Structures are given as C-alpha cells and as structure tokens.
Length: 99
Image (cartoon, rainbow, N blue to C red; front, side, top):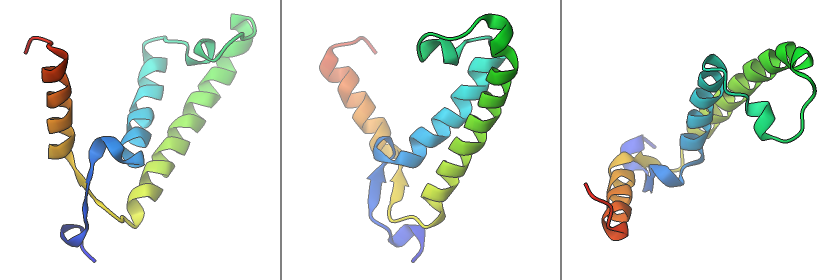
C-alpha cells in the first residue's frame, strides 16, 4: 500500500512528528548551552554534569531519531501537514490573536 492510499492523519497527531522535534531540540539545546538535565529536577554539581550531559545528548538524539524512523517505517496513515497548518491557524483565529 503506497502512502497515497493511506488515510490522512493530521501531522500534529502523529508520534513521529514529536519524535523528530525531540531529535532536533535535544542537540540544539545542548549547542546553545541550555541545560535540559536541570529541567528534570535536582542535579549534581556542574563538574559532574559535563560528560554525562554529552553522553545523554548523544543517546537521546539517537533514540528519538530511531523512534521517528520506526514510526514511519510501516505507516498506517499518510501525514497531512496541511491539516496541521489549518488546525494551528484556526486555533490562532479562535484565540483572537493578531495575524
């Protein structure tokens, strides 16, 4: 079955979308010095974090990329980015936010 024959799924409802976002966010946060470990709660002294944070960033990136790949390997739905854009636009309009 090709992707054209699959039922559409709003991209914002697809797990692979969030897996790819995490794949991008984790290394970007590390690149800009944002401490994602600190967001998870109490952490050890900065001297102890450096090597662990580097390893965690690498492992998290590999894990989320693998997750996204596995989600799209045998798709059950065709990702519909147009539906995602329409749902975001309708939310903005309903909230009364200026365009």
